Amino acid sequence: MPKIRVRRHSDSQSEINIIPLLDVLLVLLLILMMTSPFITTSIKVDLPSVKNSKTFSKEDKNIPIIIEVIGAANYNLIINYSRTIHLSLKEIINQVKRNIIANPKTVFLIGGNKQVSYDEIIKVIILLRQVGVKSVGLMTKSI
Image (cartoon, rainbow, N blue to C red; front, side, top):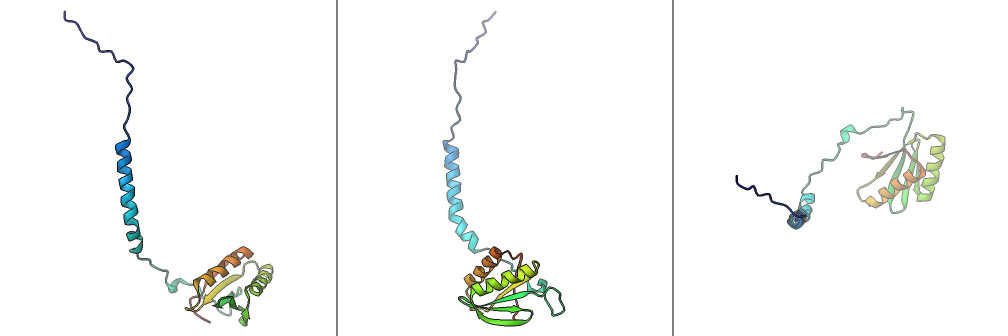
């Protein structure tokens, strides 16, 4: 009878070489980093249409308070269709606090013409949120 050879494996360690995997991942990362600036500039953004916006009339029970941004640190405030002009941001915030205490569900609208810096409108939105205003909207038409 022939002898059967039995191979004995001494404590051999099997290792997975991950160097090629890391090379491929780094190359893919570089490709992604190189192409991402081109992708972001070519995205078309569909802005919401004005057709779906809510309109307010004088018959509404909850008349919005309108803050018009005239320019840098120059604002108008319209409460119950009466306009107060050339107010500072502190005066606006004081009026907002009074109106929120009187009616916490008051809707605030922010408007500005095309020449107004976007930064000014964002500043007003942030301050309204800090004061506790729950509902802030942007005007699409002048009054």
